[in-house]
Length: 149
Image 1: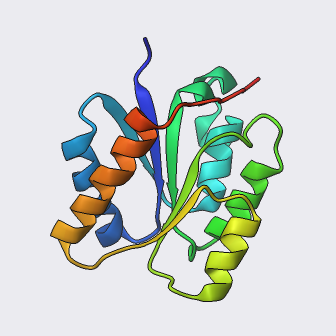
Image 2: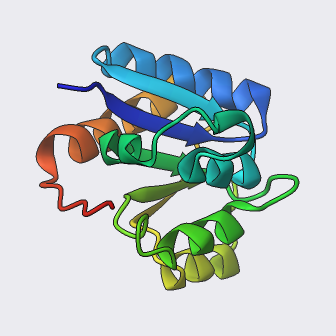
């Protein structure tokens, strides 16, 4: 069986490092990949540019996308919209993991099809606790129905 894949998309090196540490402590049997912006995420999912060697079938192993909002090139909300309008990708679970507490970002994320919206904590212990709950839910508790072509 292929390893479960978690994609973490965040342009902040310091935030990404903390999330990746928390994920790696909880998800020892997962492949965790950090991408730096929404465009890189879309390229990864579409198997384009630097990810051209990937096969689209590998997307079926993605169990979770953690997506920041405010990023260069393509925002998390724009990337979310691109995923949710794509018939081959729309069932992938996307959790917005962001520092934005703005009601407009929250509302727009859910309107675009986000599966959850979580505001990042600034201390590692709180972040670690939340990441473990997110990972447990999406990797173990949630029953998947991912139909990828």
